[in-house]
Length: 291
Image (cartoon, one colour):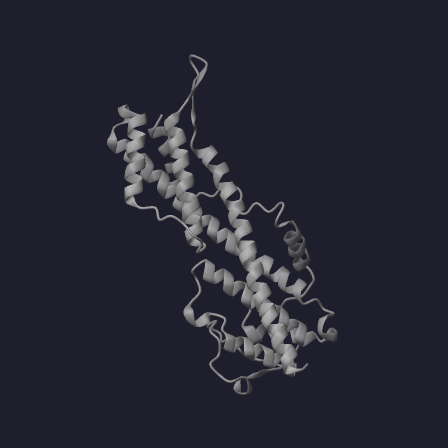
């Protein structure tokens, strides 16, 4: 493969991986917001049922606490994913407690402030759990996208070039996710120099170690990097220090089906978003204090 062609392929792969990572992340964030809305309806009730009288009355304090939960949850989730957000500070919590006090003057300032603070903690914990589940889910999506990006018949059925392209795609996809989730170390960032190194490998049709065991790119010229021999799938894996080979078989097929359903059916995160026994106790306690 000519060097100019290899550089074009590697550059376009990086751009596509980063673009799709941002799109997948935003899609699952929106789904997580809907899951948060559903959870708020479960943990904070806005109606009070009098079983003796057989009546149901509206609970404005519950409505306020539910809105407060969503406000904290959505902005915490956006902050965790490096998206524009409003900082939730103590002044906002004090303001919410003051509004709650006006709705329930009999509760007292200490109980209202405690309910607002507890709801805030639950929302922050839920947002952290949702972020972890999103990044975990998108790792599998990235694997499926990498295989789809470079199918077995690409590059005239050259297995090494196919594997290098797949692992390069996954490297760029996960780098974009790590940056958004604020877990990427500066030295591990994908750079233009690394992009050029991968183009050299693709042009030469050989694998050389580009990522060290610590996840940081090797600070060597391409010609000086250690050459890797062996089966193409394993050589490309070692080239990028990835934990597994990328082959279109077995569980990967299931992940590709998941990828096709990502936009329409994936409900990440789903189920119980609670974090720890204290939060499990606290969610009902926050509601109880205002009833």
